[in-house]
Amino acid sequence: RVIEERDIEAPVIVRKGDLVTIECLSGTIRLKTIARAMGSARDGEICAFRVNGSDQTFHARMNGRGRAVTVTTAHPMSSKETLAAEASR
Image (tube, rainbow, N blue to C red):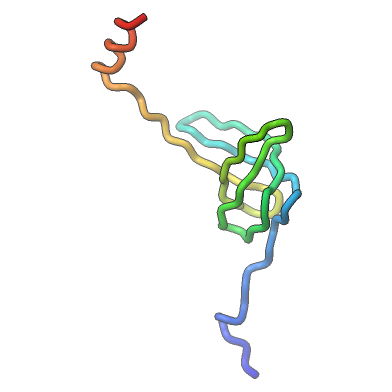
């Protein structure tokens, strides 16, 4: 039998329970932490994670074995919203 492209899958690079370095990017800010994978994933796939001691999960994209990245975008308040927030203090 001839092996075709559809017969080949990328290897699983993280399994449930593995510790992964998570890099969170937000504008020019870069944070790193270690979190536990809540499932299995291949490179480029989204996986759920939980930081030890926390009940909250978050998602990040696998970026090589033992690494994942998540990106957030800041939504700055408009001038009107800033003025309203300051006025309510």
